[in-house]
Length: 323
Image (spheres, rainbow, N blue to C red):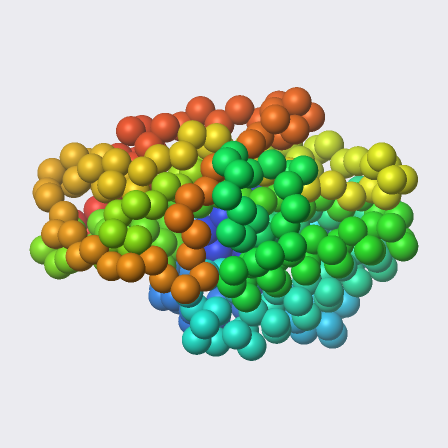
């Protein structure tokens, strides 16, 4: 019996697999190791996992129906984290989002449908589904029908697809709307990594919306705690007799982007050179998670403030890059 984690060489997937192995689970990981960002970082994450006896890895794409159908038949839970991430990249390569986040998501739902006795299908959604909503904080009760990026549209579509499969085929499915995850082994296209790299190099950092941005920065360990708590708590049926639901997983404490940068400067011992720019297409000025339901049902209680999380990221970054 094993837990399947897709995107196992990705940032959140890697940490999730580590946590599951630590608590004694058998884990099957899949990842296509694509080149959206440095494959060496993905391989370095994977190298931390491969020596562990309870971990099996298959290099494959979630959209590959044949490969997915041929995975071991011992799966009890699916944690589907693989996706084409990034808001701005969706303007450059929209097809990648359809292939991974729509076709790949469908393939994983088909796997869930055809896995006898599957206990829970947990999948990654995103705070991006809230689009241009101006009511803060974002609640799972809010309407989410006006995405401002293709990435957000594919994530919302994924929620609707999962609802439909849970309705038709009666397996428990839960979507998790992640809010700006950061921490060690993080993605190079995200703020903490980009800013750290440029600050250390003495190069300007691009600060969008002229610095008037807020993000609900959420530390990776808190996110992983939420993922595993979700996996352990499948829903039998919802209020509409469908075993599907969504949760927000965020720090519930939005920070000004300029404050985030200040903490990063302190951790690095070096000042940033600011390059203020307009807000980018697809971006939103503020995100903030209402985690009422996550706290009540999952016991989700994020505990890592940026004052603690950012120095941990900086320490990892320096070690990883041998600085």
